[in-house]
Length: 83
Image (cartoon, rainbow, N blue to C red):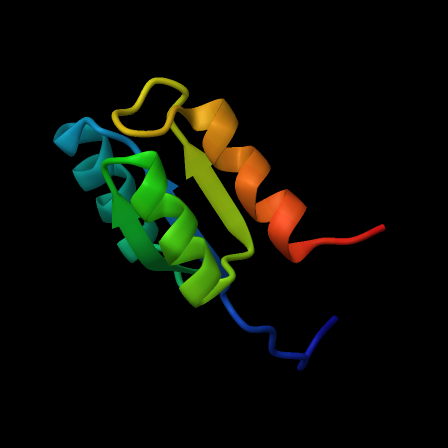
């Protein structure tokens, strides 16, 4: 809507490849409607960052050390959301 301001989309990225993290960070830094609230290379830290920042959107690599992407995405849902 014209004249209405919205807060930027808060993004969390979890990927064990440094080039992917750097690339997504570079893209997001150029967007006025997005902000990067956290980035990590493993699933356990991703869960901790989600708990701390409650991101609007989280991008998770499926194959990561310590906790894979599928298990990572299940933890916040069962801990923070109820039906």
